[in-house]
Amino acid sequence: MSGMRALERHSRGPAEQDMVAKYGRLAPEYDARWSFYVEATTRETLARLRLRPTDRVLDVGCGTGALLRRLAESHPAELLTGVDPVPEMLAVARRRLPAEVELREGWAERLPFADEQLDVVVSCNMFHYIQRPVEALREMRRVLRTGGRLVVTDWCDDYLACRVCGWYLRLSGHAEIKVHRQRECLRLLQEAGYRELEVERYRISWLWGLMTATGSP
Image (cartoon, rainbow, N blue to C red; front, side, top):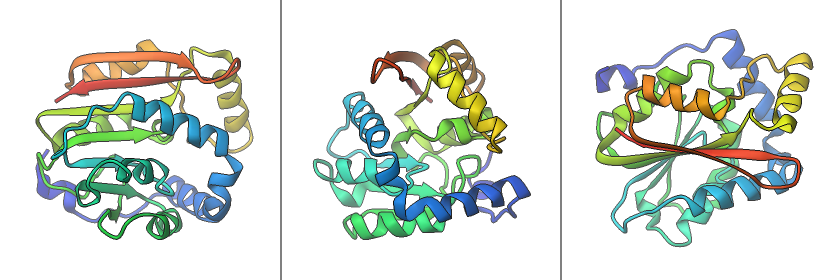
């Protein structure tokens, strides 16, 4: 896939438009409503990131900037970039982040970057919304430099609570939700062409479990 193709503008389909509208309405209260989960997923993702001082980092689905804000405490802000399809989420992130952090509107399946621009691509609490996961993972691999690293943290469908929550959300109108199991996540990464793969699953409470997947392009 060429870098120029990824930089093209794409029209949004109905499902994408609905999701953008839904999370646009939620943006002002998102962090307060999901404070435990946002803190936990951010903490666990940071624990699995090993950044060098010169690494250029992209947060895919950065939302309100919770992970980028934590990263900016110890990593040069000018090396941090976030991308998200919801303008209202990016507006919240812009208010809370250093001015040097770059924010762009875009989708995981069509990242607005040329080939091999980044050292680390990270995604936190977003992968279950991706409609075309292999396409998105290939896009993330495309923008990674040789020797770069992907780190994705998300719900894990091996845990009963995650399955029940996924069922409930789909029944209540969130048809875009697709939570993956550990083995399925590994298969998606392999299909997308990653090497040196690891998918770790773990609990963040007695009820709820996550997984973090890592790989190299």
